[in-house]
Amino acid sequence: MENRAGRTDACHNGEVPPRFLKLSDVQEILNISSQQAYALVHSGDLRAIQVGGRGQWRVDEAELENYIARQYALAEEQLREREGH
Image (cartoon, rainbow, N blue to C red; front, side, top):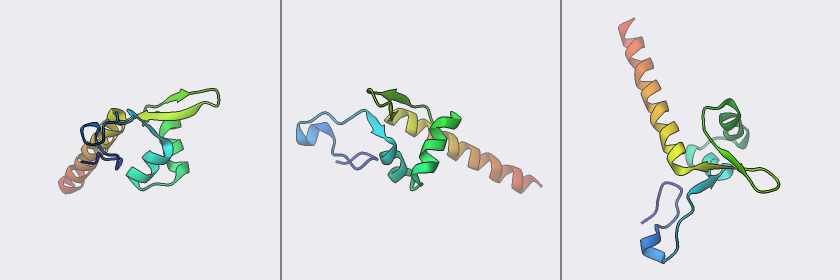
């Protein structure tokens, strides 16, 4: 069984799936550009950490799911506001 990032779950291949996603993974999952993924992190909209000597950004899968849930809630709110006008 694959998770949202397209990786196979640990129970099926004997490996532990990574907890953290690269920005390129976020880009692919959200179908956005690399600049948009970077902007989400730098704006604080998507929480991330920097790891390693070169400061590579990583996003916890749970943080990405939280971001997606917030975006759905925001979209629903915007639709309700439009319907009310």
